[in-house]
Length: 480
Image (tube, rainbow, N blue to C red; front, side):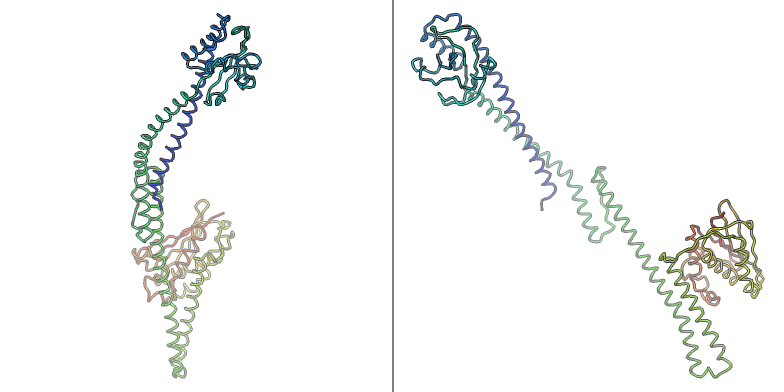
């Protein structure tokens, strides 16, 4: 597999060769075209001079005129051909005068046909007489001109193109020499540029390989501000995100393991307790009237606790997976809270707790929420406030309005919560006093469920607590 550095150098060289070849073609074409135009201009000027000479002394015999043409052609390095109106060659500076009659008729020559139409004509071809490439320039003579009494209608001047080819070949040689040095320079520049471009890419490739092999602490150190630097930065950000995801995943795995351990423990405890009571009864205690009913009641109590635990597990699983559907609607807050408090008055009275509702809202104020799920929230908060209160203490359920929100709070004068426990109070299976919580029938999931239900109402629940003075839970709901 070719390295990117090699590919860049090859690309530079190919580009340079293409440019040099294109330049060679264009320069050669332009030089050829320029020289041809200059030659045509020179031939046109020479035809003027020749015409002037012919007209100045048209009485000379043909042989003397031929001799003069040879001298002029030799001096000007041109071939001179004089042609009559029928296309017959009268004289040619490169052909002996006595052989002139043997020259083919020139009337059909392209340059002669052009001259008949335009007054001038040009053509480039290999001479049939001399077998060499020539540029032919013909001029049509409009006024009577003769050589030894033979009228002529065309003056044709021609030059060999070897000189033009020699100049083009010289240009070729110069371009090749310049091109060679240009290729050397391009090769050097290509090495420099390819190294500058490929080095950060090679560093990125090496870094990505290390990351792929598991080194998530590896970071790319490319500091350029171009696309390469942005790619390196994006890869670093991606690795950091991946690292965070892995950390978060490990945390979730830890939480999951802890959760499964807690669930196993919470389920195992009542099952073993019930199993113990039943085994005791089966071994004869069922016939002992002093213990049989107590054992049965304790077994039923543990089964009831297990049922509540399973119900809470189902609830929290549905909430966290999004399977629990909420049924939101508007309902009057005062009437709702009064019914909730009334449902717990008997339990409060048994513990000598004062349970009251204080509404700072009107009878027409309504809140928006899932009535059944909010009942679950308030049941949990009120039961906790009663169970963890002091004899003769109080529990107050309050509703107060603040603009488009109504805040609901549950306050007690109970034992309170130590500050170090507050950050974890809403965690699943977190208990401040494990033994007392179980005595009160708690599953350790109640406040976690409360938090999820409140957050499903686009709200949040807060807690304030002072040890030995009491605790207050607050959350808000949309009001109308």
